[in-house]
Image (cartoon, rainbow, N blue to C red; front, side):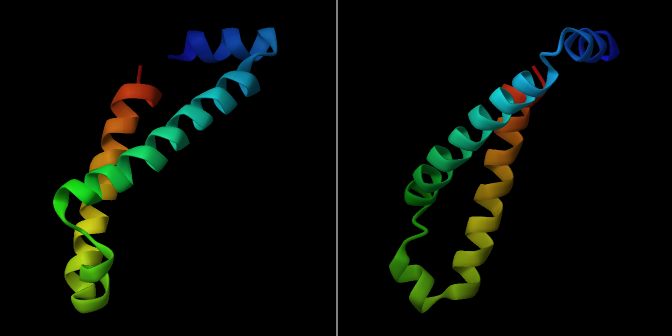
Length: 76
């Protein structure tokens, strides 16, 4: 979207738009990761007893949430 970038840059709104996008994306990450971890059963107990499985689950969850954030907020 070169036209959008140029328009935002020239109007002086690029930084504000990028900041707002970052805030929205971070909020979604901060809320969705714990929610999806709970639904998947990635508990603190698992973290203590089966660390490798917990790390694998959390990495997969983080990747899923990042994909959702990209599609919902960044690539709109």
